[in-house]
Image 1 (tube, rainbow, N blue to C red):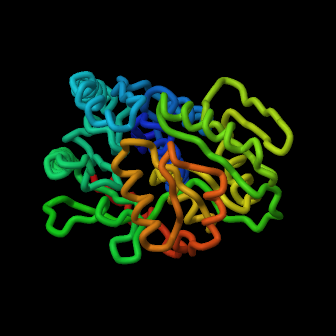
Image 2: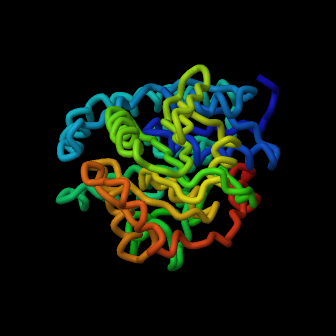
Length: 354
């Protein structure tokens, strides 16, 4: 660990890979601005960031043990059932963070949806694209509860635009708020490059089990009769990268950020979940997409429906998807181009306030 008085703890939630991937540009910008990021998470989110930044100090946090139901309809019930474990993990990470503040002489904390990663002693930022947490009939209470926790942080950064058009709609915008909100513009670790098209279709699977495996198996079967060249990223983070070519489909278990950037730029269209991190990546790279939201995940279902309604991207439910659906992509205008740049220097002033 190099000596530095500019240590910033960056702690994404381990829920799929989206929270970790959108922290990658933040970590890069912290380094550019003279800070030393320290990574803190658990499970595959921690593994991903350790692969991206092998030279950075990292800390394992308690797991929230978020599990998906096999049947999407039971998703909310499964979360409620697991909530005691989650609350316990939040208490544990709070205690751990107290020690980390002293051990690493932290100057700030950036928590992506980890409710216990904050401190009253130093500026603590909460990153979320969900000020409103959709949960069906319980949306009002889940949103108020979430906002209550956000209030405990110094600032809340929303990776979207405040004005219309924006990417999050009612998820990331509330009318009256006593929260200290900053709209920082969409976050993506990827850059648009003009590369020759190699693949007609890129398939990117992500998200927690068992839904990730269920979608993988379904799409492998559905793509048997697809004629174009396909690159298929399974989203399985393993110790070694594996590549397998079967007829016109090239399979990878996972890819690094640079490899994903190249592959998306080389692909005509992308089939993936409607998770917000994927949405930001596709908007940045100006790629047309087809979405399959994770069953029972209200936020992904809301985004998929919103984009379809606005003529931006088509979607299908996981159990209704057919390969012919991909022909609909041409009828939609695609995600809006992102012009605004994040003003990192301005945002990071918070950590130099002492």
